[in-house]
Length: 184
Image 1 (spheres, rainbow, N blue to C red):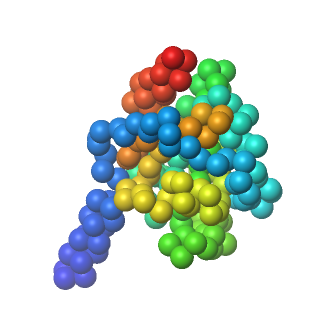
Image 2: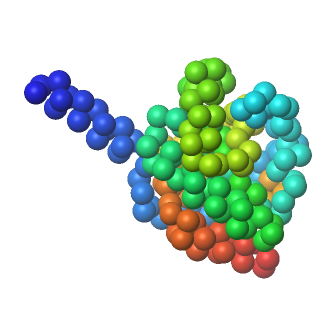
Image 3: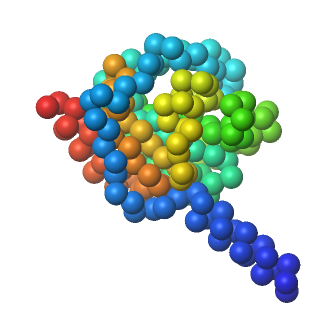
C-alpha cells in the first residue's frame, strides 16, 4: 500500500513537471533571433541536419519534447496532423528530443531508440533532431516545462513560444495566428 502511494505521488509529480497545460503564450520580439546557420546536428537516424532545415519553410514549429513526458507523447499524433495539414501553408514541424541534455550531452542511445518507437507508434514522421549547442542556448536551457514549442521564421526570428501540450484543434488556432502575424 505504501509503495503504491509513493508510486502515485511520483507519477503526479512527473505529470506536473511535464506540462503546465493552458498557460498563456509568450510572443518573441523581432530582436529575439536564433543563429540558425550555425546549427549542426543529426536526426534520430544519425543523418546530418544543419540550419538549412529551418529555411525550407517560412515558419518552423520547433517542439521540444522528452520520452519521459506523458503530455509530450500524447501530442505526437497531433503534431503529425499539423505537419500534414499546414505544410502547404508554409509551416514545418521539427521535434527536438531533449532527453538527458542537462550537461550539454546528446540523449543516450536508449532515449533515441525509445523516441523512435514512440514516434512510430504515434504515426509521426516529421523530422526530429537531437539538440546541439545553438538549440540548447536558444531554446532549451531556460525551459521550465515540457513540452515547449517555439515558432521561428526562416531568418531565425522568434515569432511565438507556447508552453504545454495541445490538441490539433488548439494548435490549429495557434498556427493560424502565427501564420497571420508573420504575413503582417
